[in-house]
Structure formats: C-alpha cells, structure tokens
Image (tube, rainbow, N blue to C red; front, side):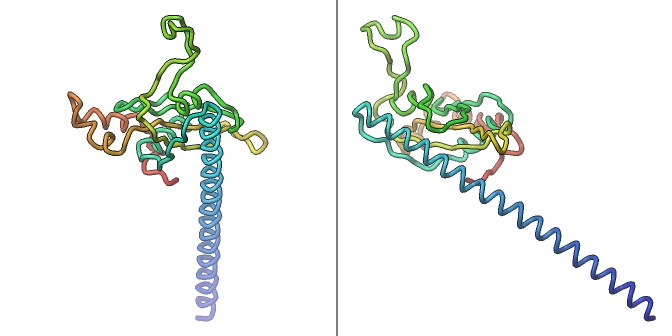
Length: 201
C-alpha cells in the first residue's frame, strides 16, 4: 500500500512538473508574441512619421491615419510569410515592400504619401513634370502595417511594410455594390496563407 502511494505521489508530481513547464512555455511564447506585436506597432508608427514628413516636405496637408482592415492585416502577413505579391481586388490600394531600414523613403512610400508616381516615360508626364497622379486627391486616409520578415536574424531585422491609400469610409462600405460582381471584392481571401487568418495587431 505504501509502495502504491509512493508511486502515485511520484506520478502526480511528474504531472504537476510537466504542467508547470508547459504553462511556463506558453507564458513565454505569449510574452514573446506580445513583445513583438508591441515592436511592430512601434515600427508602424515610424513609417507613419515618414508619411507625415514626406507630405510636409511637399507642403501638403497631413493624411488621416486609420486602423488597418482585416483584409490588409491578412494580406500583409501573407506577403511577409510567403514573399508573394498580394493585391486588393477592390481598390488596388494596398502596396508592400521589404526593407532593413524603416526610415528610408521608398518609392512605394512616396506613391502612397503623395498620391503620385514617378514618371517612367514622357507620355506619363507630357508637361515635363517628374510625377503623375496615382490616387485621387479626395482619398485622404491611409493605413500602415509592419510585419517581421522571416529572413530576419537577431543581428539583421528585415521588415515587410504594407501601406494603403484609402478612400472615405463611406466609399469603402458601398463600393462593392457598384461592381459587376459584388462578391469579387472578397477575392482577396483566396490569397491569404492559412497561418495568416484572423491575425492580431
């Protein structure tokens, strides 16, 4: 009887130790995810400051930064995880780029911040200008997401940045109703990697 009690005691102790180890491991993983989420939100803030600076240098009023949509979160996560090019079939307003330095003014960032694209031919800019219109001036909102790129190392962080110039909230809501196929607006879901569904940010 005493032998059985000792065995039972050792068994329950082992279960308790295993449970504690699993709990600590889960807490560590959660803490690590939360830490990275905080860093990535800070990184997105850095990119937002770049947008403000680009607008200010061009003597343009600031854009309104808004919360990323679920679509943008899942697509940018997919771009970071797979390296694939993603797109928004509704507005084609989401752009992504990979960078080691969030302070660099990439052309992608300038396109969204200024609403213009650098001219590649005289046909695009017949008046000798250097940039041509990409987005309507009335699109005065934008959103930004930053994800850690899988190619990152502790000594060399690489980021996938997703940034979108956004129309009004009202236009975003009603736009699909004006499509020939209203369900086409949900086509972006087919692009999303399974690991990127329902992300937190």
